[in-house]
Amino acid sequence: MATRKKSTSHPYIPNTVPEVQRAMLDEIGVSDIDELYRMVPKELRLAGPLKVEPALSEYELQRHVERLLERNTSAKETISFLGAGCWQHFVPAVCDEINQRSEFVTAYAGEPYEDHGRFQALFEYQSLLAELVDMDVVNVPTFDWAQAASTALRMAGRITGRRTALLPATMHPERLLVIRNYLSPQMDCVLVDYEPGTGLLDMADLKARLSADTAAVYIENPSYIGQIETQGREIAELAHAAGALFVVGVDPISLGLLEPPSRYGADIVCGDLQPLGIRMQYGGGQAGFIATRDEEQFVMEYPSRLFGLAPTSVEGEYGFGDVAYERTSFAKREKGKESVGTQTALWGITAGVYLALMGPHGMREVGETIIRQARYAASRLAELEGVQIRFQAPSFKEFVVDFNGTGRTVSDINKRLLERGIFGGKDLSGEFPAWGQCGLYCVTEIHTKEDIDALAAALKAVL
Image 1 (cartoon, rainbow, N blue to C red):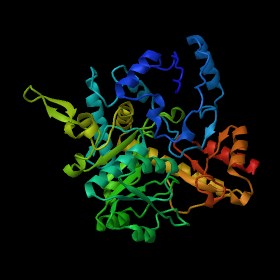
Image 2 (image 1 turned 90 degrees about the horizontal axis):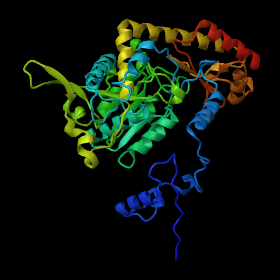
Image 3 (image 1 turned 90 degrees about the vertical axis):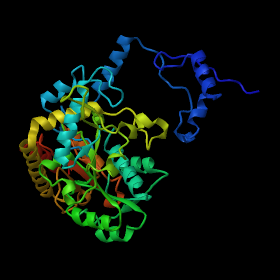
Image 4 (image 1 turned 45 degrees about the horizontal axis):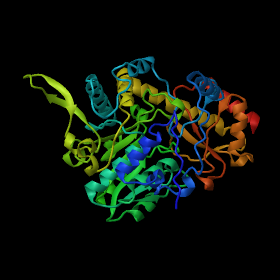
């Protein structure tokens, strides 16, 4: 006779009172809570009890957490050249001021509750971002770029009725994992190679991989490794000739300077809002967006909410509300095209504040500053003995630095830089082992000439 596991309640974990947990399991027809996790591989499950004992008092817990946080070294105390999906940009004070207002600070994409002003704030955000990316329709923010790209590709699959998405081999490996997981089992992901000298998409390989089953060709511009993809129009033409859609992931802060993807044939544009007035927050300030033309085939495939202007019961008066709410997962629930759930609407409001403050001229100025500073940094590092810039195509704010000629590992170099108060670039040796010892360096508008010179001097000292 099997013995039932002993169950005890815990002050930090909800619904762990044995009687409550038993009633919930009985209601859904499950004998043991472990049955709920049967699809999770055993090697990923916690084998023993969760070690969060003893339960601390509120004050003790506060002190414990503060001591843990004090062990961190943040980008405030150092000069940071890390990027790779979470970038250090200047955040105007007004962004923090607005997103901490009581009517916005808990904003998300569920029910409106009493914060009616949120609908207008999100409408204004959508309008500003639509102007930036030169598209008509923008959704309420997703969790991050990875989810935005995944949903965009799922949309392309439903529109075309096809099962394959072509993606660049140089894309962020973690983003690729999310996309593969999100598209499975409805769609497959196939990687397209890159040109060794430039890092740009290999057009011959793209042509070879296009087929009658290709739903979408996806690129990122700038790419994960920083290159500006100059072949966008040709890629769009090839995708469209094959009956596929062209999806472009973009860093929106680059669009004050670079041509928006819609101008070179993009059908769906997606990306991350984090550069637009959102702090890094230990990697947590992420929010994705999706943008399309105002065409029914696209609009009706959005699973998330869209806010627009609508007439009210008062003649001549307009308000802000949902567009085609019946197509969303909030309305369709389990019958929806995909589940959206809680979203990062607060970051959409923040991005809207940033765009309103910067305006077209401000966005152009910050873009020019970034590309100028990044080029200066690349030229300074290339002067160091044994150091090269790996790819020669134009880049925006990130670039790959090749340390193979120095005989040192990126990990060792970064440790020595940190001793001098500098976060070096992201170590790519694990993600792209064929490149050897390479680091992804990021330079934005917050980096001064003195910061870059200090990096060059520190690298010269440690190499």
